[in-house]
Length: 115
Image 1: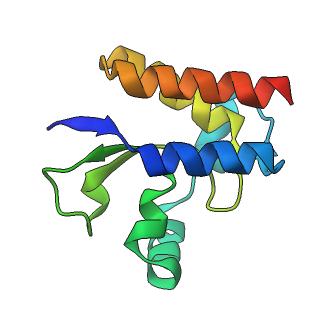
Image 2: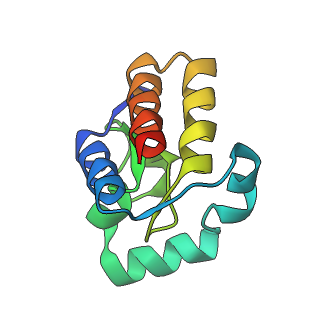
């Protein structure tokens, strides 16, 4: 498994934050805010895999791009960036030594906290 930074997703996240589409919640709120499997499936059916990928900062190009297994490190609810998702992802990326993703999430958190 070779998870790498999903650059289009990072651009998407930054754009959302700059547009004020952000929830400034706390880390522990992510368990409630994260989309459910049903929410994900509905989004994929409605918007497609490319749009789904734009909500995940991790991508594993060795996986089929039309499976959820290819995407990791979600940061929002398909409408807004959640500060809690960014914090949770940053912690998990650091834990599993995905340094580039961790650093991208850290910079995203700083952008959120500036606003």
